[in-house]
Image 1 (spheres, rainbow, N blue to C red):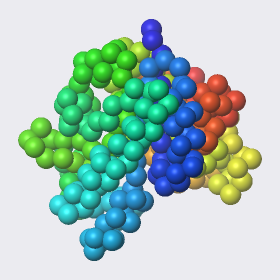
Image 2 (cartoon, rainbow, N blue to C red; image 1 turned 120 degrees about the vertical axis):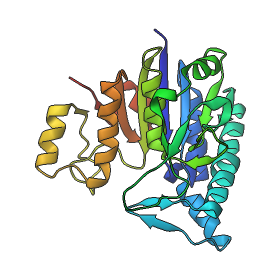
Image 3 (cartoon, rainbow, N blue to C red; image 1 turned 120 degrees about the horizontal axis):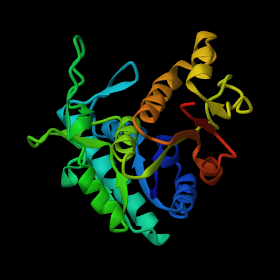
Length: 263
């Protein structure tokens, strides 16, 4: 079975031109089939402020009204996505920029919440994710670069969490490829002390995760990412790796970051 690496890159790298260039050079050298999923929330926030569009956040999640949706579409699917694609082309990596609306790759529905209206925010319709189109892109030698936007099938774009998109793609393709899911961000991995980069947990399984949570040694902001990771492993992903984007090759070789397994 062919190896497929689904790699999610955080906004801290996108905001730093030098770090982004280095990361994309490293990414272009990753062997086998690969998919890059990116965020870009900080740049979208700055752009919205420059345009006088007030931004609302609830528990760290963006409320996406109609004007904000225009901004995130321009920033995510426009500038950030095409800049990444152009950089990868310069490294002989045949990238193709997509959103969830392109080729019906990621159908979603508007998020329903009992008390909060998140606006045009989407939750992925896992069962409707178009595996055939993903396979066609990958098997023809293209490298998809995915902006965090989905659609509802009725002409409406939806802003969607990039971590979740990476997990949904990885799990959907887990029956067709040997998939590893990599969350690359600003920390060196899952830490027992968020202020000490030397406290990386090299390997994490469900039992150890439960123990660390019980002792309060998992930073609250990391819990959703880890819950996503274990959900992906339950659905066919081989392994999940979390760590620093600058150490991409070491993450893939297992010599850096946190490798999450289901054993």
